[in-house]
Image (tube, rainbow, N blue to C red; front, side, top):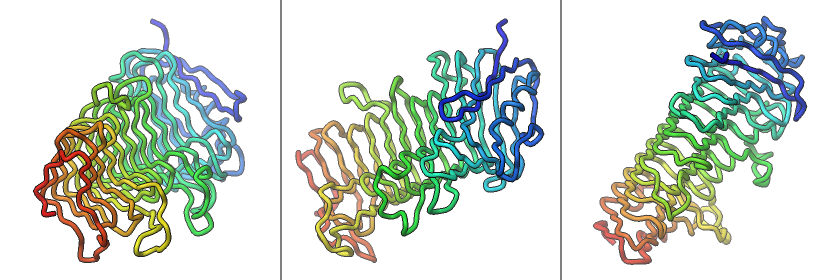
Amino acid sequence: MKPNHLLVSCLALTVLTHASSVAQTAGAATLCLTDFGADATGQRDSAPAFARLMRASAASRHLQIAIPPGRFRLASRVVLRLSGNEANLGLTITGAGEDTSELLVDNTDGGLLIHGEAINRLSVTVRDLSLVAVRDGAGTAVEFNVPNPGDHHSRQFTAQNLLVRGERFDRGYFLHGLIVRNAWYPRLDNVKVTDRYGPDVAGLPDGERMECALLLEDCYSPLITGCYVWGAMTGLTHWAVRSSPEDGIVADSYFVGCARGLVVAPCPDPSRWEEPAFHIRGCHINYRDVGIILQGVRQAFITECLLYCHDWQGSAWQPGPPRDLAPVDVDLAYASDVIVANCIFTEPSNPRRIAVRIGSDSGHVMVRGNQFNLEGTAIRNESSLPSHATDNIFGGRRDFSGGLKRYDDLTGSLIGTDPQ
């Protein structure tokens, strides 16, 4: 049987500086990074220690890399290349806790890349550490990719208890927090990703911000729980490029200060069937342009979420002409058989704001039991297919609903039982 191989290379920009090959046999190993020359003070480059560790792990089918307390500078990105197709191949990278074990990313490529080559079956976990950008635009903190189009069922990626941040609250940021490609059932749990914040960075242009905090590409049925995103142009992107991923849950998570909160686009082409079953529940979403967008989703639930817009220009609380762009809390661009229920849409904002937009390619939507306490429009219907609005309330004790338009039904297909 062809042996498995696990290669590690440390890249200085695009120059390969370290590579080693390790045959995988039965058994597992736990190796500590400091035993291979990593500097826990952050003064010397610790990226070469990963290569030395990998060369010592020849007897392990599953390797756990232990990163002890300390600050470990990466002057170049660490790239873990995995190949071979025997069962029970895996990799765990584990620290001693967030802000206890820190990888200081001091390059423009990023921190860790786990890349599969000619491999279908593996399990990867990264947990209990911080990735710290000590410069602006420090690439991607953690990236996983298994491009082989074979068996997807055993390609598992888990990230738990990760903190991705800059060196200071107002200095240092990653272009991307996590990028996960071609994983099956990826799980992100207690992953916190932040861009810079504070008065000195509040007016920075979009091109100088984190592009995306959490990016899932061609990933089937992700489970994202208890995560926190501050800033970033996009908080979460879950989309299809080469496949049509179904399902997924985002629960009990925060997306605050983002231009776009969640972009869910498993099937952007309205000539094809939407992909089924996506749930967003119990989330806190503070956005500028769009809170949630569904593009090619059916049988979806958006429930018990708090949504508010930080584009205040033109509101009663911030006089002046509003932007031409109409912010949208929930944009059902191409979505059907959707329930939007028990959510709160609130706070002063651009009076062009739309809380729920039912696009022309959408329909059969139930908007039920929500509170609309905002300026702008509660529900805008552009579809000729029927949708329903019932048991919603408008306004609030701290009332921001001056001038609120409850319904903007462009086609007459919205069936409502709420008082006009």
